[in-house]
Image (cartoon, rainbow, N blue to C red):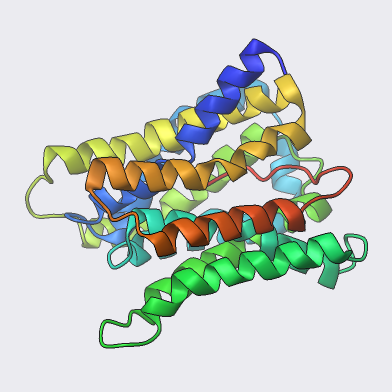
Amino acid sequence: MSRRGWVLFALMSVLWGVPYLLIKVAVEDVSVPVVVFARTALGALVLLPAAIRVGGFDQVRRHWRPLLAFAAVEIIGPWALLSDAERRLSSSMTGLLIAAVPIVSAVLARATGVSERLGPLRWSGLLLGLAGVAVLAAPHVGGADAAPWPVAEVLLVVLGYATAPMIMARRLRDVPSLPLTASCLALAALIYAPPAIATWPAEPPAGRVLAALGGLGLVCTAAAFLVFFELIREVGPARAMVFTYVNPAVAVAAGVLVLGEPLSVTIAAAFALILCGSAMATARRGSPRPTPGR
């Protein structure tokens, strides 16, 4: 990989590793619809001009049905569920649970006949990864302090993130990434505008909350997508997606260092199980087209 490729790779590892921290900060003072609206509206405002210059919206119009489905399971549903879950879960816990996406993707691909049969290595990876998820989720589904719904919300996000690439691969392969992403963000912003207005805070949020909202929209969405597209052009889609194995480590580090979230032996063990399981479960030749967005 070139020096430019490594720089882009490092940027993506951070840009899509810190949203969990920023969401955790934002939901302290504003509602979930406001968080999602701010992120999608800011991202759309930045990306739409670039998308218009590139063109390709005729393809977007021709594929509007799968685009709606893709937007629903990649952005519209997941970003609200994540924000709501982080009102109860730590940002590091959320980031680690999201690391199960490659595992669920492997299961869905096998169940729908997209991938080849799973060998012993990949089955072992699936079991390891699922064990890691179970280690993380167990304290939240039993006992006096049980909080099963936030964990269920994140697992629904995992399912959505695993399903979205299949929709893209089968139905949106011919749609350019930039207009596709800008259209999805604009659609999500329109959907969340009414509930965001209805729950708009009576007083201006704290400065750290405004900074978190701005960071989510401008840095972790708009800038992240632009860097992501450059990374794909530089190293190709297969190698570009390797950064998804680094994101959980960034999420944990950000939560521990910035928010003082605990780094327990349980979290460390779950991290190792999920990451090793994901790498083993997705070990194969080739790679699907990457999905545009977290």
